[in-house]
Amino acid sequence: MSKNSTSKSWIKVLIELFEAFFESSRSKKRTWHQHVVPHDYGWAVRREGNKRITSKHKRQDTAIRKAKSIAKKHNADVIIHRQDGTIRDRINYD
Image (cartoon, rainbow, N blue to C red):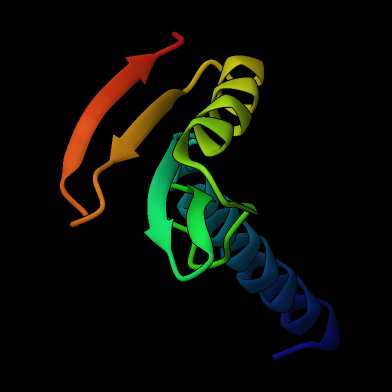
């Protein structure tokens, strides 16, 4: 195999890898839905799919206001949970 054909084959492999990477990243569409969940501190706002908490609040109504403001910016939903973790309400901002 000549040096020129070897470099072309590596370029093809790299292009295929980049295409596969970008294709897989496009199929995983993340949402901006905000969940108001019980927390040790009181209530927390967390983006759907995240483990990290966006904000903590002493009162649920304060957490709901924060979640609503984020959801409105991103045309997402607010999912409000009860103290036991079940869903109490869902507000849609699509």
